Image (cartoon, rainbow, N blue to C red; front, side, top):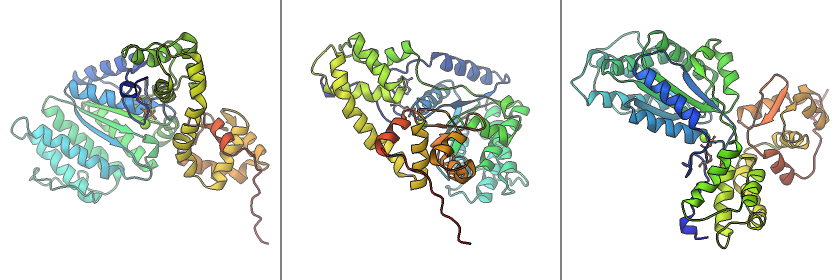
Length: 400
Ligand SMILES: Nc1ncnc2c1ncn2[C@@H]1O[C@H](COP(=O)(O)OP(=O)(O)O)[C@@H](O)[C@H]1O
Ligand SMILES: [Mg+2]
């Protein structure tokens, strides 16, 4: 098929041609946003899901929706080992400047600029000058303790937005990379804001373990957020995600070709885009047939191995790789943590630290105590291709 017209969009955070199967979630969020604009108490959202299910794309869509509804918005992606204040402060500064453009400066806005200035100084954030907020406010956002200062700052910015008759929306991607202190501070800040009935819509997205992480950080976090699960598409949505974009270009799929793609992709959105994209390129003409899919599949798997899976694999130590290989031996999972250790030929204690490192790197997660699962769909099959032989773990003996 004509590659110039290929409609599919494989790639992290790339808006798909058809955002299939997310209508309910978008509608819930739209209602939440309207409630906040009307100053009604509303929980924030933490979108939970594995890699490639479409969290970032949803976050971007909700960001756009919030802008269209008149929210002032801040959007941040937490980097691995990064610093939240450094990322959030410039975004909130932008929010305050945009509030300022509307009418002459109000009291709360000047106050918010001052708190931001304290915060920036306390956390040594590199940022341009903050010209407004001439009156210094002491004791607001200036202690250097994030759990105290972030609530001060968010409250001040929300009060400024409120004063202007608008609301703040914060979008935070890759929440699992926040340090425990950052996550706790964020939850405390959202709590403060909600207790004062100030207008904030918080949307986070990340790997499924953030539900447990935020619960551990602050027990009341479940009263502050809903945790919508973002997973593989259901069958009708997966079909539309694949078939509609082609249809719009005048190209059809035969139904057994569609079913085959749904089978190999397990209806994960990223894989659907990847199969759609490459099958389109390799099929000679419409309709796309079962045989076209079958012929393309080995090449697509090789492409995923060399790119999507491989970049994750390469960031791991040999022992971390071995651990994942043992998990793969047991199947797609989740697996009993004890069974993984047994497969490696050791006790749980001998591999507890490597397991924790893999959780920190976002490679595995634990839904229930004693369970371990991959965060990347189909990673188990990749591990077997990459490391055909299962090796036992032989811990180094300490010299006596
Ligand atoms: N609802 C959907 N329908 C079809 N394709 C989707 C959908 N959501 C995401 N995608 C596609 O899946 C891929 C991964 O999306 P992304 O938002 O980066 O996932 P995540 O952030 O969960 O890792 C992208 O190529 C995107 O176009
Ligand atoms: Mg993402």
